[in-house]
Image 1 (tube, helix red, strand yellow):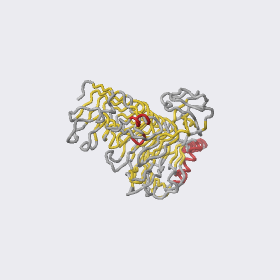
Image 2 (cartoon, rainbow, N blue to C red):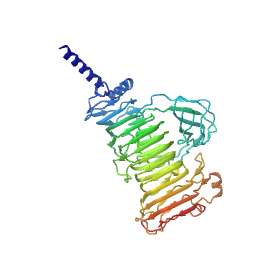
Image 3 (cartoon, helix red, strand yellow):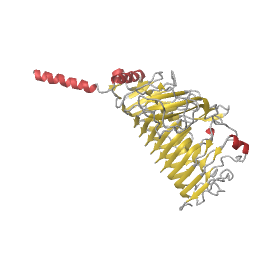
Image 4 (cartoon, rainbow, N blue to C red):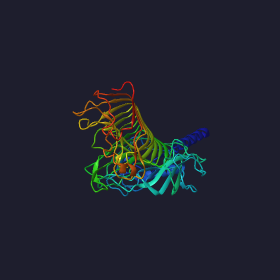
Length: 511
């Protein structure tokens, strides 16, 4: 009898021990019926999980309703959402700037002292670190990315992020790309060594009904921790009307390194209209994924629910101040780097009507990808159409959009007259198209073939303009095995004068 009693007690203890291996929302009062607001329970569950160092597991088959409460669920442990569903109601919010989930690092950021200047390509900082860190450098005395056009602004302080080892060595894969004659602030964000995984779950956002102004809503996952994996998540959007405020990204990555988003599904938001900074109407877009001030951010085998070629929906992804961005196996409406990316790779992808938009540095590599847009690359004119580095394209297909209206160009941009962007502007030094099929069968009536470069600037003969705001034109173009469906040759540019000194090499297989 005693033996049986002991075995029974041990069995109960074992069950309790197993039950304590993870935290559930139900433990803190969540109902999961899709009607009861489970927001407070979700926040409390993650707080308890963080304190105990335990993962969180959602209830399979449950539907958790999240209202407009202004408190984020802080995530510091693994999360398995499984087959659970979440309804995020944004129609009435206490604070649109507060995310639903905030993925936080285990250690706080801190200021680095003693560094007064930095130079482009600098190999080491003369300061010790407690461990690997993502370092943000800021020079408040210089303004860059002074935007041109309908969304014009006065720019932002000079800044960037880069990885630094314990001994102060700058990771050569995330190089310093600017010269800093003055360092106003140097902030270190410790890099977590252990990976944190968030997987599963279907999230449906009931869209906000706010006024169509630039008040970006942060109602998703704000990832601020390095070394995070987001797997198998699905995000849908419902309830969009004829107006609404934009979103900054359901998955929004910032101030961290080594984040991978894989096998996820996202939804593009409707494009709305608003009044831009220049006082004129502009299209206003939302983002379902974004990356800012981060390095080594990857999107692998992801897609969107909305048609990538439907212009009623805004481009899915936007980024600023990032290094080493990767798309691999994705089907998205666009890739976009606003305020500079250093090194980007797009491979095994299909990109829709907004294509590849970027300014930045280093190498932009595109492989085994189909781009359906007006141009293969669009160098953003609102930031100076600048890329200080190389473009390399291998084994890709380009399907020009609106081919009946205008001749297509592989590289589009605008060399804007008389505007100071806060930096010298460059075109890619070297551009290589190695294995490219151009489906220009839907071409205009008067058509002599596609161009490598669009017009860029017909006024580029103005010597005063060139001297005051120089624009460094591409040195070399290599076309290898480039074929057109029309059978027409690939021409250099309709702007003969601007590109008169570009070396063009055409290899066998060119049509």
